[in-house]
Length: 291
Image 1 (cartoon, rainbow, N blue to C red):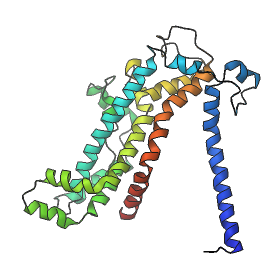
Image 2: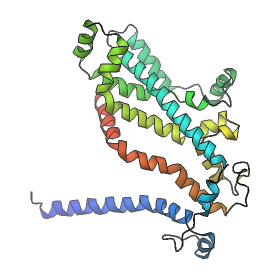
Image 3: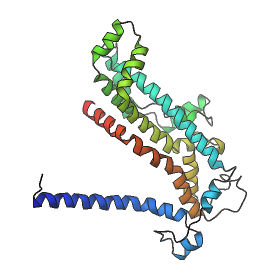
Image 4: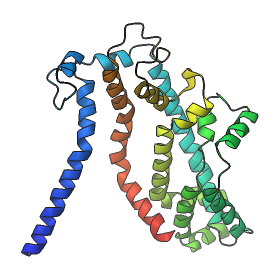
């Protein structure tokens, strides 16, 4: 269809604005990557204005990833916390959403009000800390999995999706003798892949990016997640010796280590997100329309 002059100008303006926004977003990422592979003498000579590295050096990555570096154990902690936490959170969210999607559930309204209440009012940081301390979870390997293992908002999104599945499917399976667990596992979940991918992605991002809870509940650096290590490297004016004590050699300039650490930590999310973006968009749309 042929566009009028006004429509063509509108489309051209939109493309120009979106291109400008994209460039503004990409420049900081490109700058971080460029500095992380630029030798410090060149960086210092150009006063930090590096858009295209004149020479390549991977000394910062080599130092951070040297055998025995705490970064390896921190990465392992983050992967363990993320995988275990996402699986646990999906289990709790799915089972709660499936139960509350059943309109004949006794006390369903009161239960929904209880969950919504937790979204409006929270106990606070100090009571939560005291509770975790009394449960003996401080400085344990699984405290970061448990402390974020449920979100009422995510449960409501999943519940809204479950309510859109024809009730006749569940009733037919129940008549054939299927248990509620079997109905959930073999009928509801296969039809709910978009919303499961959406909620899983939300939990994944939360677990991967979390450092604040680690600051509160973890004191052993060998149990710390990689985001806490990154935060400490960036926030410190000099490299904390306890983080890379096993590296053994004199550390390179801090600015390069900070940039390299950002790339190392952010890379998995940047690689993973494009593959699950379509599920994220579809699931969020479903939740917004039916919620």
